[in-house]
Image 1 (tube, rainbow, N blue to C red):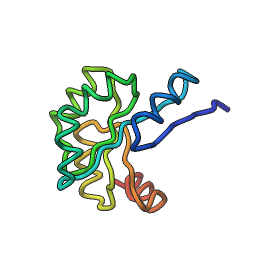
Image 2: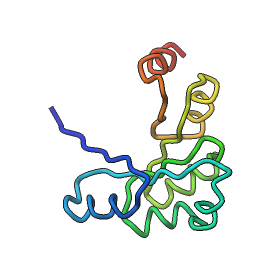
Image 3: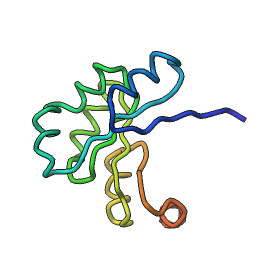
Image 4: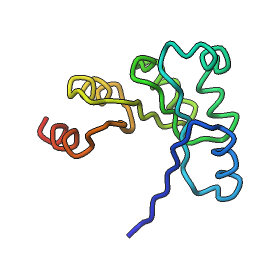
Length: 117
């Protein structure tokens, strides 16, 4: 069986360290939802931030996710997995847009609903 390793962390310093220790570990840059002004000011371009630190995934809040963002991230070699997707209508839209994954509070329920679509 193929081993998969993924890291999910909001601290870019920790993610950068993980990548420096093992290039094969897949890491993603999770950035907060709207209303966190300090983060929005600091992270003007999440795609640029992810590329600068050699991350594999862009993990945007659902409200920041668009089809254009997913296309641009893919062109830059990043995978996209938005959070927190708890409604099947949101999941369906993101799948149509080309999201590579979804972060949800209910993985088993969401998996079953997606498979029955």
